[in-house]
Image (cartoon, rainbow, N blue to C red; front, side):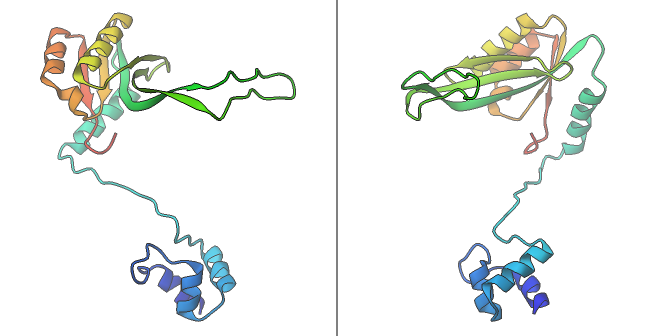
Length: 196
């Protein structure tokens, strides 16, 4: 019986269901729901959980991987390695009332209600050696804002810069390429496609 439950669990669920439930399995095998649950616990089976993955199809995957790992493991002398990323569509929220401050025996409070003030985009560069972050919030997420962020980073970092970036179109825009040509201290290292 146990072997049948395990084997059936590892096959596709019947009909148009996404996964086996203990009730469906009990009906299918002809045992109680608690027996199915006990067998699943014993074998570490959790048919309701799915782990997603995506394989990169980048033909230069290995070269890019070696390049980036090399920067982390052996950063170039007299240079800074920055990991650059953006988070767009961040909601800019204000609470409807001020919270109460933290004091002994009570944590700080915040109201449930909020007022939405649109969205913002966070541009950030993490210095992988010391953990410092250069960050800017901007209204939009276009190449113009990315160049403004690069200018701010350029002003803040006096050394050569090796920037690890993903394959977002903004990073490869012709105007960004022109900016890089005018700023020889910068070198972009692109993460493999679908692997950032």
